[in-house]
Image (cartoon, rainbow, N blue to C red):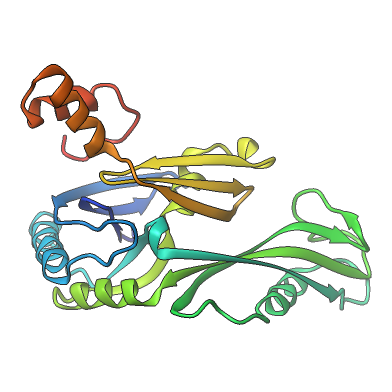
Length: 265
């Protein structure tokens, strides 16, 4: 089975996982390493040296445990370093049968790419939603359905170019290429929210160490995301202060009552 490395840059820690896909499509986590670092606050770039040290420690541990050379990694981009642009597009159906084909969808996506990117940002991924066939709403995939014209809305998600440069440089020093960058919010939503619940829109709240990211998801599309300046460490400090407990004890209490994945066990 082909292995992939996924790295998530959080506001207080860095997580890396080695994963593969089972025959039934399930994702298998073969190994995970987590390191705390100085983090970031409200869009301020992570400290390059601290991030590099954390990634170097993770890469060394994964190489030792997996016995493989890590060449590239998929990097999850947190909400403070993303930007989303929405637009609309339309395209004549070009097949003689006037049945929508996959190439028609590709051409429609090319039409959607006619925009000016936000300054200082680089495109990560684009997706289409709200398909219409000859002006009538189309449920689910329009492929195979009859129409003379297909139209849709499009969402384009960008990464802060400065953030991408800091992460790429830090990974490059460990011999790993950052490829590709993806939205952590979109990836998290697709993994945790069942598809039927996303069809009419859903909210994903991702509570990190220093802030919470709130994202609006529609089907398989990220429409927007915002960050709130309160996170898990604030809750821990409140518990420690209110109950007069050491920080570590308060952290353990908090972790007993959260929905999340324990990568340390």
